[in-house]
Image (cartoon, rainbow, N blue to C red; front, side, top):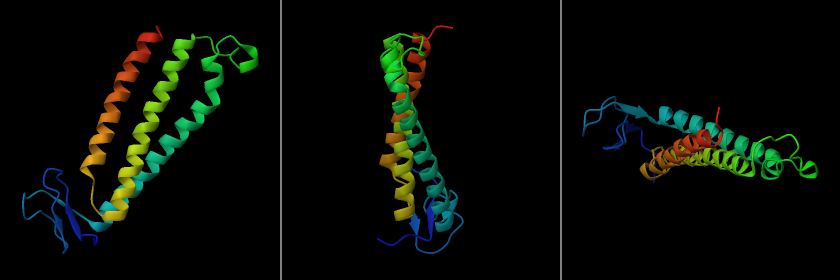
Length: 144
C-alpha cells in the first residue's frame, strides 16, 4: 500500500487521493497533505508515549505505598489514604496510560500508512470515556 498524497480530514469520508488536493472530491471537506498527516501522526505518537510511559513510571513508583497504606516497610507510611483509594488512584493512572497507548498506536499507524485509523480512534475515545468514569469515581472516593 502506497501512502496517499492527500487524505480527507472527515473520518466519515476518509478519501485518499494520489495527487495533492485542497478539498475532497467526494464530500468537499478539506484535505490534509501527506506531510500534515505525518506531522499529526508524529505528535500523536510522542504525546501517547509520554502519557503511557509517564503514567507507568508514576504507578510503578507509587504502587507499593498506595497498596499498603500505613505499612512502613512497604513505603506506605507517607500515603494517608485507604487501600481502596490507593487502588483507585492506580486504576486512574492505568486509564491515562491506556489513552496514551491508543494515541501512540494511532500516531504510529498514521506515520506508517499516511491515513488515520477509525478503529484506533474509536478505541482511544472509549479509553477516554473510561478515563472520565475513573476520574468521577476517584472524586467520589477522595472527598474534599
